[in-house]
Length: 300
Ligand SMILES: [Fe+2]
Ligand SMILES: [Fe+2]
Image (cartoon, rainbow, N blue to C red; front, side, top):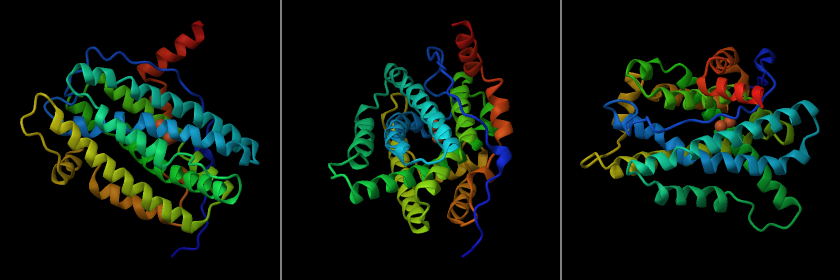
């Protein structure tokens, strides 16, 4: 095991702001990656997980604010909270559109809500050590999840195959606006975890939990959509199809996903070593939704 210390890349840090975006979904087809329901639905799982997941981030981080003794980190965490609240809302707004197209995700989102609100909720804990332990555990879990949101953000910013296949521009903009902000704020959750605790065993333990839960929820979500898609007869989701889509470049490659595991578990890991802030900022400077949000803010 390496004894190297994490080395943040300072140039990758920028002040964070929430962009109040909105999207019009009327023209987005059911299979927004044309002819590829599996890719469409695998990515659609984000709309099911993120509204509850990111609301939960915000809920936990509001409790974490009093533990922060560093002004710069506090500013980052407040910026992070603003961005995640907006992400949660933007994905939530896709759900009525899915319902109109015959895909009612309520049975699945009810499970996801239970997972974040009950299983990972506050519990009725007395003030003191146990309550603090549970808060630290959840702060570490968020750091592990954010390793994957940054991984996915970096992936979607570079997923040229989706453009080549004529993916719906509105959905691509939602994914890339969100992905770019994930890359922008990719260090915040890890910095907060290190600031309040940073225990290596906790990092490993919560990574295993986060990775296992994400894989479990994701494959269930993809299966749910494939089985309930009104245009598919006997729709199925399989690992083989995921692997093949990764090779084609319409989903993340399995190899890249596996390689990201030891990076997070390395003692020298810092999120600023992954992805590119410059690329994220460049996308946000050209994103139709981000530009419209900026104009609306300017006009107000
Ligand atoms: Fe997010
Ligand atoms: Fe995030």
